[in-house]
Length: 539
Ligand code: HEM
Image (cartoon, rainbow, N blue to C red; front, side, top):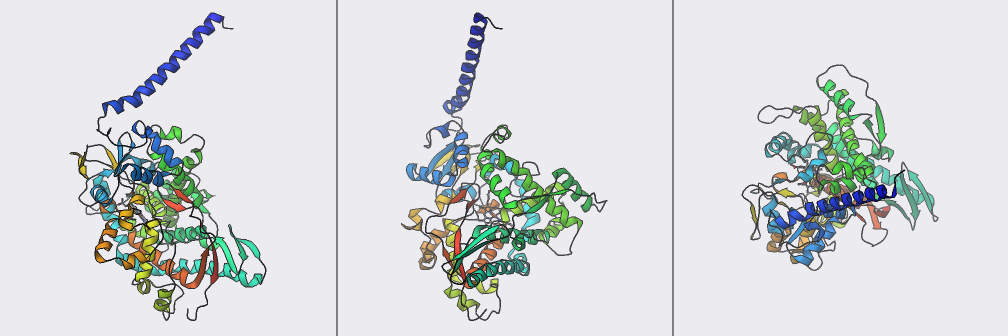
């Protein structure tokens, strides 16, 4: 038992320790601000952002990333400080300076967490030489010519999607003048007012992930047919990597124990957390990642690795002879004859699933589609017939402008010698980014109706205005690190928009703005639509 004096001493020591820790923490936060090594003190922004990268992480974890940065740019102008070492610069010239071909700014440490538990891949690597090597190996997989040859593979999944939606529409007749409701797989539907109503997001996800899995590994996940968010992963990622190595070297095949996980749910949980953690120092990520609110998303990171490992292992253990992207990755060599090993193969496969599996179309016009598609004799819009339709292209562009898959600024590090942007010299080592969300909504470029979905702007624009619009339109980013899957994404978006809007009459449940998950990827949380078959004379 402590005496009164001892207890007093003990509590004095505790208080002193607490004061000391608070002092050290305050000093650690304040010192860099006053030393101002990167000379960023003059840049405006949220007060906390000047002292800690915890501020931007907090904003991201609150689902307010793109809108907060956009609001700060409206309030303060082109330059906004997002963290002690990070400045966001808005506008087309800044975008070009940071990401365009002449720029040698490398990706920031932000990207490291995206390779956690696996090797760096084409999307995450920060090393210029490694990136160039990967890009050389993979570029031909995504050339317009290669993409055209994939049309017959992806068409199977367009058919599977319309088969499911036709089955949903059939409930309208069955319900007669009354209502009805039910579930296909894990997606619920309701019939009322002569339409079937459902959330289209899971359907587009199933379609998109099945297509990318088929293109990449020669077999779909089977989500569209089962209408369920279920894929299989190895019980342990290490055993999956071992299975890939064995299959690649044609040695014995160890039995691989598998478990089922929900892919879309894993991606959503991972997406909500990973970008918030990514801006924190590497040592803090596993600590914060284990706190309530982050734990589930942090735990989802290795699961995505597992999904990629399973897909590669499965495909190598039972090849089907089709020339899918994995075949090309296996055969692919850079100029020096380098080939991917098991870790690197699964890391690249992860990027294909995560980056390529989330492409959705938003809206379209039916009139020019009928004229172009009548007589093609196909239920699925052939790419050759739809890629030349200006209004369809305008609709897809407008969807990509307002709902671009990535809204945030992609962080880069200012290279040796510094970088001058809009007349401001930024020092070597400064993290710099330019937000796509703000670029796509600038009233100076897009006009007073910048926040409206108005495809006609792409048709009505004069040549000069169109040029200005194009320099402020970068859904796939630009330069050396621009999206490698752009051709595939545009082909998929144009076919799905044309096919769906030609076949069905679609209305939104309400006019309220879509609720968005604003992580590294931006996407609607859900989108309820009312669908019925259009009365087409020719199909
Ligand atoms: C509408 C659909 C898509 C959008 C809006 C989109 C957008 C982007 C953006 C903005 C980047 C730059 C990311 C950064 O710098 O951090 C990127 C990179 C990338 N995307 Fe996409 N993407 C789409 C579809 C696809 C598809 C279908 C694939 C492949 C199957 C793909 C594969 C990649 C890869 C591998 C990179 C990294 C490229 C590199 O660093 O060299 N994307 N994408």
